[in-house]
Image 1 (tube, rainbow over the protein chains, first blue to last red):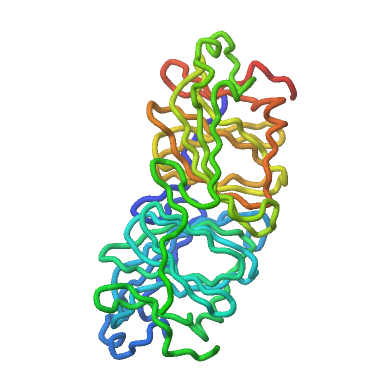
Image 2 (cartoon, each protein chain N blue to C red):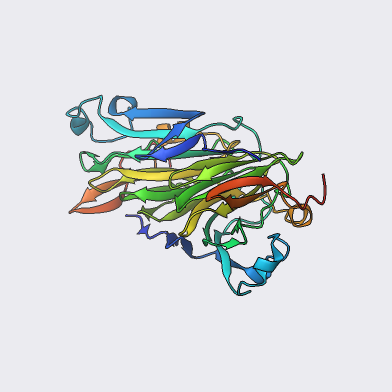
Amino acid sequence: MKKIILPNIYYSNGLLIGNNVEKVVRKIKDLNGLFDDEASLNKIDPDTIVYEVSSHLEEKEGREGGLFFGITYLYPGKVGNEYFMTKGHYHAKIDRTEYYWGIEGEGVLILMDEDRNVCGEKIFPGSLHYIKSGIAHRVANTGTQILSFGACWPSDAGHCYDTIAKNGFSARLREINGTAVLEDSKKLLYV
Amino acid sequence: MKKIILPNIYYSNGLLIGNNVEKVVRKIKDLNGLFDDEASLNKIDPDTIVYEVSSHLEEKEGREGGLFFGITYLYPGKVGNEYFMTKGHYHAKIDRTEYYWGIEGEGVLILMDEDRNVCGEKIFPGSLHYIKSGIAHRVANTGTQILSFGACWPSDAGHCYDTIAKNGFSARLREINGTAVLEDSKKLLYV
């Protein structure tokens, strides 16, 4: 007879637990320059957690044909009228793709191509999103509870945060008259 | 202002719905040679559905760096004392990997390396399974309700069903004294 074992990874309360799982916590103080309303930002405790990502990183970083898997827990909140969001990135290997899927809560996946064209897709429990080649991606929580979503991406994709850190997205997701609106960014450093 | 749209894919009742989704249904009559108890097999309606897979196939098949995504709905049942299961496969590109994760129900992921060493991992809601390079994989439903699990794999992985169809796995998952047991296969056509 052969062994039947428990898997060494599982998710619980929105986070992965087990072997080869790494957790990243992003607080307001770690997200310098992400939100544009500095007056509102200064009123928020810098230790406020904006999001946590737990990732299963068993595969060798950079290997073609491997995969990574992550769960993000994005807290509800706003800086001024801008929703709490992730930093956002392109993949370092620009043609690498990614799946996101909604687990709990509600939000918007903000997508931007290399010509800085932006659109958003609603995230909800059961939604599925394919992030194609060459598309920067970030997620904002538009609800009043935690937004949790899953992600799977190639282990040779890499992350390029620099372009977004420098130039931002060309639109920001704001609550305007009680509705989430993708508004052209006022801080367009680069067109 | 930019557009915020609904995603064009979502999952509901264990299946994906939307654009570029393809559904495959496997009935008892499609699974010739999969189960070993032929007397019990002949007593089952050949149109009995064993499993359904709905896959989001927007990416071009064979493209390096792309991904596919699927949800499998595996019905409860047995043929003799062998649990309903999927056909199982290696990837055609043998070093390509895959993630499975449990959504509802309970089962076992059966893994076999190229030397025909077999082990099993329990699947349950929240379980996560990384299928590494060179590992054949199949799933059996050991519960009394539907087993639903998600999958994400590289779009250049391909599927090789032939080796498994010809030689099977080296162990079969049977209910013995009320427990799921991976028993050495009696039909070892190839060692």
